[in-house]
Image (tube, rainbow, N blue to C red; front, side, top):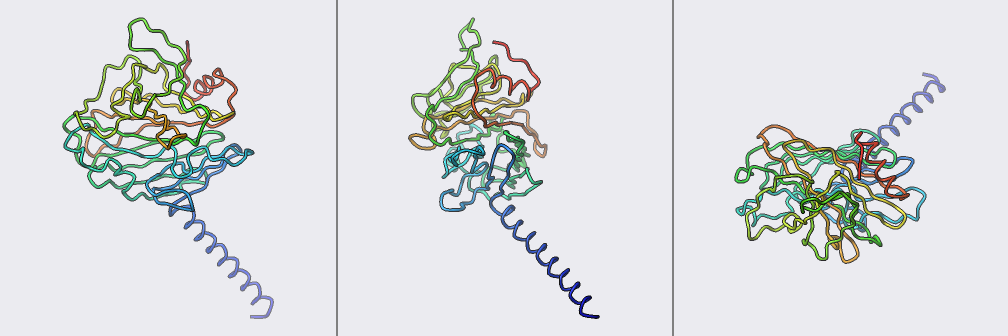
Length: 326
């Protein structure tokens, strides 16, 4: 082998080593505990429930960092916590009330990057809840598509025959802490109208079911530990979306219809993330589940500049293909 050939082989080896090393580094960064996603509009970090950096606490998974590009760098979610965070699994059975209600925060999660803009969190089960789950987060322009899927491995929910799932988003000090949605009251003759709602205290008038729903999942009392689930208000949402404001920006969360076996309730707290930090949450109830059979639901969140309620409605109509009438 002459000098030129030797040099060429050496260069190819160096390039190969660099590529392999880069792949390994990327894998360690993106697949162990966090993954960064970026579009023309948003910058996002997805995290499992391990701590990282100087701020993010263990026990909070999902969208740990969310920024609008070309802004001052303020995180939309509370830096210690997260948004679209898998918070609770529950059944309403008093026999479970002594269990840690934050088991899904504690059980190990595997973070898997599916593409440059899509990440999935996978959890085999929790200590007491035999629920295999995955949550995917896919970045699309100014939105994040979110899909939760779960398979009951055994029947730990047999008493009341539903599986309760709770997701929380802790908002970083917005000037307005309440949420806005189109609602009716439970009173006869009530007509749909825009409502701004902020509970007076944590757990009071804290969640809102869909208009016309006859299903109120049974919860044994007293002692149920999740007050945002039991604190049902007399407001019933007419369309499955709500929004909140943080300065000039709007955060919209929209839900696919859950079908005859599911129900989604909006939920909120004035100070779930601390005195100045509300929680904008949701609850999913699943009935007629079957052991070994997967179920899922889909959500989209949007973060952008707020230009009015008509634009919020248009955003929902474009995504859902359904017309809003009020």
